[in-house]
Image (cartoon, rainbow over all chains, first blue to last red; front, side, top):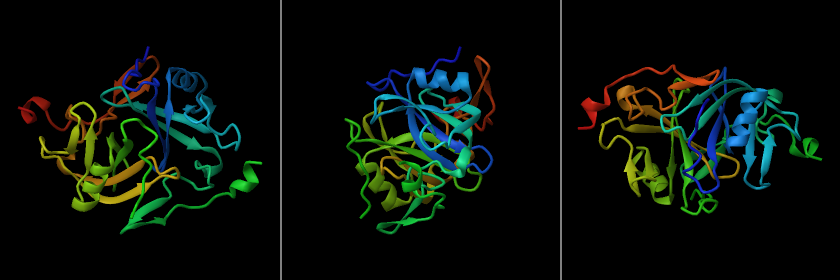
Length: 125
Length: 125
């Protein structure tokens, strides 16, 4: 039985980092509660807790871009996990980019460095 | 001026993922408030907000294992950042491992997969 520490946050959620298992690219960060983590272990597909919709969220349920779990890593404090995943559709971000981290700090502004894979208007109808 | 969204959390903090810039290994996750983020930009060394000590924290201030910033990425919602870093001392974890994510889920238990770099008792005296 794997025990994580869901107590540090009033909502009982901890961060889950999704990392592409071959490239090592960090795709996104979302949150999991105990249920989302269990569902992920059971199904082999990344589940999160949606803070905005207040419900369990199967990543890719709208876009089809699910994340197949290859490995799960747990940190020293047991309050953060890494989902190493194969990203279906090659895009993790709802804005159509490969990764949610598609911009880098350059001086006093942000420069787009990510790859645009799809147009959100075609996917979320 | 780079604006991040520190409002989603009552404490005004957001997660910062430290990732080794060459290997792509995720080293740790900690939190930043506006001050820690500014200090990081100004100094080129990773600063965080310590939730347990309630103060600004220069990573490596005790161990010497500072993180030199190579690049900073910002996510779509502007509420998570990645610090791409060169990790001095080759160890990010206070338990002496290369990464805080030194264990992986294997069935119903956690298996150590990380590399032990130092003995914490020698470093934190």
